Image (cartoon, rainbow, N blue to C red; front, side, top):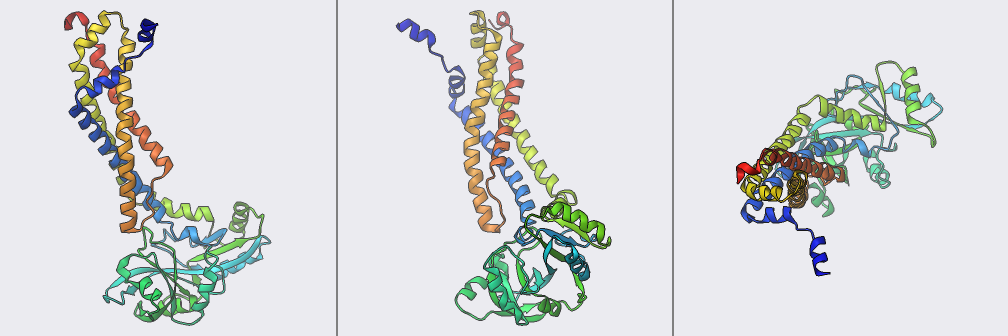
Length: 390
């Protein structure tokens, strides 16, 4: 019975080979961890910036969006005739509309008196704008000229507006050189194109930016009746409206913004290249570790081959070393990446978080990196001749 036990027991050869030299193992894990963190950060920044570019877009209470075909992105919006939005009311599936002016204006920090560009949205206070059910109550304060709602998630460079407002202080400052008063707070969040946001009435918006034609808007929100197919209604409106306006579904509006940053800027390429560099660095480190391990143990491998062990079995040992390195290197990379995401999110207020899909992707990349390196290191074992080694 005792001999049967020892025959059935498997010796963890891959683990023993890796832990035989702890310093070498630590170097390998440090390299894999560094590569994993680099991939996490590069891919996280890329996806986070793309998501940040549509922070405001996701909050609109709308099914369809009208835009000018000359608009390139949120940082370069062009106007179109407001009557095009009114014309959509003739469609049987349209329930309501909201005209929105969209532009960047200069906000003066009431504490430091410095100025900074802020995204300003103008709309009719009685019309729906955001999904937030409490927003309609806050919007009533905008019926008075010169009143604005400040985004409490804006960067600190705009001043301690949320703190002052909650303390009950009257906050007045300048926007585009005109005097305004903060009448409330909203939660929108900064985007890749805007560090802060404010919402006001169209009347106040036109006062702040008098060069805007009264009959021109940058965004038209269209709400449909329950059960309506937004894609079919969008197709119908495209056929009936002139070509000086573009009709998008809500998701199409979001994708339009993301595609601009993906295709018209170098952001995607830069961060993807950074992740690829992390992959290459990790592959080189793991290859060197496994190659050295195989080279150092060639006599032992030769002995096993002489004893009758098949080459396939010994190659499996090297492959298991690669899997062990991938798992042990991934865990600290994941934990460190999550911590760095939290730090970046707190410091920049950008929506960067550990995404399950990204976590799986990085693990697959690390596993592929280690297994690929193990495959290359196996060539040293395949080329080994037991007779020459002895």
